[in-house]
Amino acid sequence: MAKIIAFFNQAGGVAKTSLTMNIGYQLSLLQQRVLLVDLDPQASLTIFMGLESHELVSIIADSLLDEDIPLPIHRGLHRMDLVPANIDLSAVEIQLSSVMARETRLQQALAGELDNYDFILIDCPPSLGILSILALTAATHVLVPVQTHFKAFKGVELLLDTIAKVKKRINPSLGIAGFVPTLYTNASQDRQILAALQEQVSSLATVFPPIPRATAFADAAMSLQPLAVYSPRHPAIATLEKIALSLEKLNV
Ligand code: ADP
Ligand code: MG
Image (cartoon, rainbow, N blue to C red; front, top):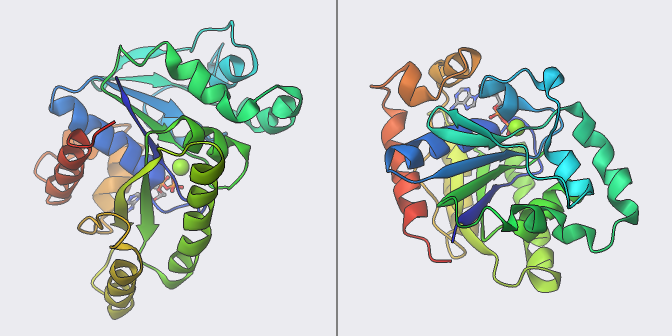
């Protein structure tokens, strides 16, 4: 049975997509079968994985709206498979409004793939809208990237509130796989925010070591490669691997 991990934070630019791709790649190196699901209409993951999002014939939205349409799975991209997105996904919120039990549409769409993968990683959009709710409903666990920055830190409470609501009303077994401090620099503000984050959430779940702000991440994304392919000796890879090993140990 696949573990389904939602990479969730309603803020944009906190490294959700970058982590989804890079942690997925580390899991693949651990011989895990990995499916990535792009649930963001901006389609950054689809683009980082090397697909031309505007040329796609079928995207995740088609399977969300019509249960008879199989998931469009692109196979063997950097040792992983991918269900892509494009801007058409932005219409799903309105289109789903008349669908019965719409919160469970992603869960249903993934049901047939649970035996084919060890991990399904969902890259959430930067919002608390229906797409993020679909992801949290389908997920066995949520992994929360948090930028070590004052503004991002303030959003954590709202994010925890959303997770708690989904747990209470729709997905009682949803677990928190951990918090990943991201875009970390050694500036005193970052160090203070990291300490405050640890204090606020370490009773809820693991706070992983911070992922540093490093241009290599952006450069790797621009060259459409995981960091570990683009720059195999980069020091941040050890942290990515540590997170992947921790996800491997989660129970479903
Ligand atoms: P999100 O999905 O949360 O919006 P992204 O993963 O797209 O965030 O990251 C936002 C931008 O920051 C991207 O251009 C990405 O390449 C870059 N980025 C991600 N992680 C890092 C990092 N550790 N250091 C520097 N830049 C990063
Ligand atoms: Mg993103």
